[in-house]
Length: 213
Image (cartoon, rainbow, N blue to C red; front, top):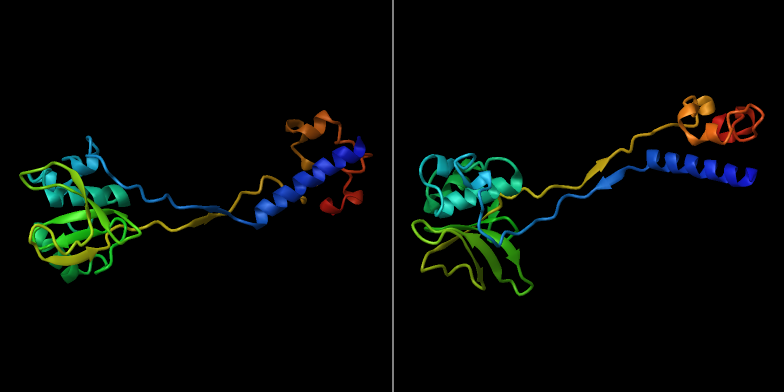
């Protein structure tokens, strides 16, 4: 019985030491594509959407893109003015976000008179976007094998407005250590129940326990 109890305590001590030394990795939340229309979320309404507040809410491609980036990042997009044909140059001239010609999840696709948001990139290179249309369709998704062709409009590129969260390491709090002689709060744990507080106990006696020296 004593050996079982001793092994149990040693296991607990080693577990605490390991958790104290090695941090716990918290993984960033994965990108969640949107394939359905907004349904009252504040990012797309007058509550938070700059375009909706000024009378240019959905259906409107820039109002939707603004709301989608707001939803993804949890903060207001840096581009908060202009029409679809101006977003590419507003971003470029103000150095708000990186931009380029390669699709990325959450990127804003910019044409000469339309913007949309990348929701998925297939292995074959095709790109699925979510979008809204000024004076037309409230919301839809569309898959392009070639984004350079969109209703005869010129393709400008992608604005990488989605800020993908990074992995964060959290230090695990140490509940108690071997330096806490006699585990002072014994009345609140299992040691008292098993009567380990006795100074004659080989496990709980600091002089005979290497973890307490």
